[in-house]
Length: 116
Length: 115
View (tube, one colour):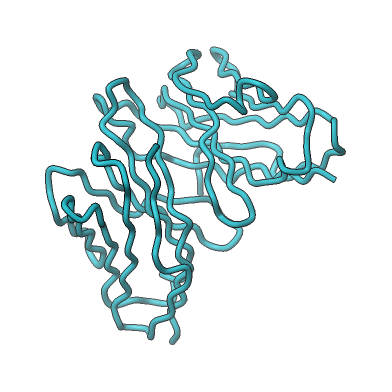
């Protein structure tokens, strides 16, 4: 069983609505990633954090997505105005720091977003 | 940026036979190559990884080979069992000039092990 906890497992939104997903990383893991997995099994990296600090994010994330990993609270990924193309499985993963390497990622079960 | 191609979209083998899944990458700076397994309706689970300082790694029935010249790596599953049936994803990551480089995933190979 995954120790990275993602909620909700499923969410359905209309176009233009906000969609928010949460992730509790594995205990002691300072690095958190968000990936989007579409129905064709293509992965798109969205953003990653070390503790509360954003390390990398893509343009899409900067414009319509917002994410945070506050201290002592779950990490979250929010889509401000959902579009049909956002329908996908959103995967959160956490990792221990291993020098310059990310190391093994531990994935949550994902939040499956359907935008009608 | 890095692109990872996974050559077999589906693969079917008989129980007990070996399965081989091949991946190629484009970025010569990539130096870390993990494999993940995703069973139906479940999340990704780490299977095995290899770093660019070696060209072979084995963990029980799993062998990973890395050919840096050809920018190719492969997962060999020996003595396959029905529970090996899943989608397998290869990935690549450069040794970052900054920390915590993201993984770039292949498109997945759906492996079926037939009894």
